[in-house]
View 1 (cartoon, rainbow, N blue to C red):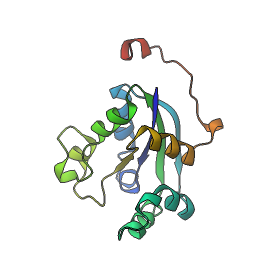
View 2: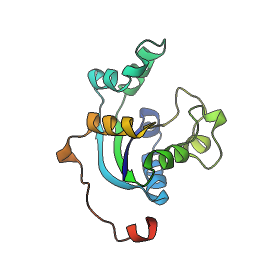
View 3: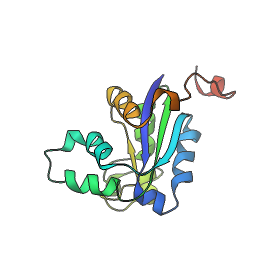
Length: 150
């Protein structure tokens, strides 16, 4: 089973879309193994966006993610990365398909509502950056899992 980090970003929290966003991942079949509301520190934001440190938009990413509370969610499931990213939609909302989170609710790339890990490796790193092992509830089985996973 793969794990992915989902961040319901400040714009989604401010717009009251947190429940709708999380619902879509659960309906897709992904299992929540960790979730918390938090104010992202500058240190954590810089660590999270370190891959973009040399890009001109790095500072604005950090300022944005630290501007208001977010909801961090660790999800688990078969092909969790691909499943989550296809549920989220293209980074640029104008290119995101209808039926995806960004296609249905976002208009601008700078306010695209949600982050999802882009690889298995980054999923592991990002989940570890936002959650301690003690905060994760992996290993539990939902009664429905037999109907979702082969």
